[in-house]
Length: 371
Image (cartoon, rainbow, N blue to C red; front, top):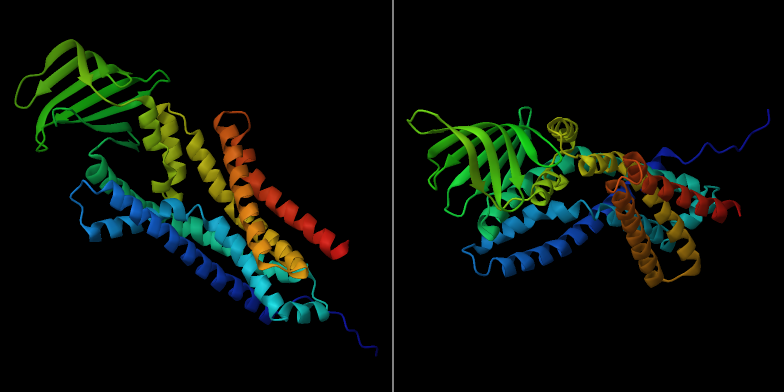
């Protein structure tokens, strides 16, 4: 019987070896980048808190809580540099030479890195993103109270929109509305007024109210009731405010403080109130596209590392990595800007960078391997 020498792909042991090497290098790269970011964040917080009564330990802790805001954005850089470093090291130690000599194609040893990148993306959006949203929410509360001296907050529940604002006389107002129109007139409004100690002062109910940006809330046909008094009717009531539609939208469209698992319910709730949810939908779709994006970035890293290994030059490898990373960032931001302006659909904006990364990486590898 004739013996065949047909190879059945990369052995499982090598699969695990390449994937684990990639994962460990990614972890080290990410920690190095986060450490650098943390130093700059602490320096900035020290500058901002120089006139505040904030302890050094508190600032160091808040610098850590602020890391998710930037940390989640530098994951693509860590994925890219991890792939480049991993395969550059394998080339330097002649491991790739042995693999290629045994008939293993670049496609086969790129797959473990792509698989590891996909798992990292899934871990990021399902575990790290919710945890990061929680700690970043703690930082936002501290930043508003200690550094900014503001308590303006926005929340959405099944019953509608809730706003909280600190007034010039140090009283606090909580406003609730079941629905909001594009001109920021609101329906089924309830307003609660508290003194600086948090004691209830007054409740106002009205069918409609309208925001005059940065000046006042105009409440029509209101029923007002102070503590322990009989309610009375007021045809018109005015409530001073510094809020504007832009400030309110900035509050509720901050995705860094929202857990991945909370996005569908939050988007549905905000949509019921009548407000725009384009930015939140775009961010959520971008998270769903990240496994494919990270796989594409890992494939790009392999192709650049292999080509540069043949040409030589570590500095060129670093410059290529930076260039590719910034190009991906620019493309994602550009596509998001188009989607926010309603020029292109949200899914197209979210998935195009990921698809392009995979297609470009595959094209370069095809050209390198098959000519």
